[in-house]
Length: 330
Image (cartoon, rainbow, N blue to C red):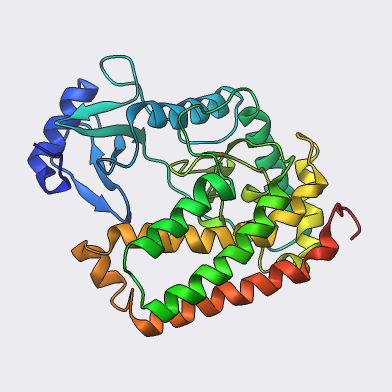
């Protein structure tokens, strides 16, 4: 029988985590927002607040989840502020409840970081540099490789082969994505790929009073170019964020080297993220929760907007030619 989130009733959630953790829980099972997984706040009878994450069946196999946990644990060992998974009763960090993999984390709260001065951007750079220094220690053998040939091309195929758009829209989509991928493959040539967070936007960096910054949610970690964890922090396109890039890299290079050629990937990676999100949405299109959150997904008007955004992004890539090999005072 195929594992299904519908089986995660409050009683069964408590049963799974009590068995996995070897401890007693109160009746608290508060659901937390998550598009992909099912996440709940729980509480032990000793008063410890816990976060249980049940991973969407079929998305990640156990070795891929282990790669994520290993990365977070490596960061924790290097005293980088992350939320590491707790050891379960069997000694590992991944449990299996009737085919649904899960893990448990201590609850850590904070507020989204406010960027008010140059020092804040330097702090971001130092934090990301430390994460990447830790990420360089080993590979993530079972995670995705963020590269146009291994991620973007298959995602385009899913969208074109799935019948999600009209024939005219499919033609425009194929043309513009082909142009983007052609440039992307060329610019990725010779770029080192390593363990990165993968989804390092500001909502995943929290400020904790009297403690400083903390990074959360390594769910999308990949082997990819380090600039992926930098461009998501920017307030706009690369050409409009030169001061912020300079400051981030100044902090970053206190802990890790940065290959200036990767700046050429910023707008390419933005286009790849658009395509990734469209592909991910296509796999969720039949889900009732998704339909309620994205009611116009797949309509002709929707595809007109998305293709126009990709065409606009293609021109942003072309206009970014002047960033080649430039950092510091560019």
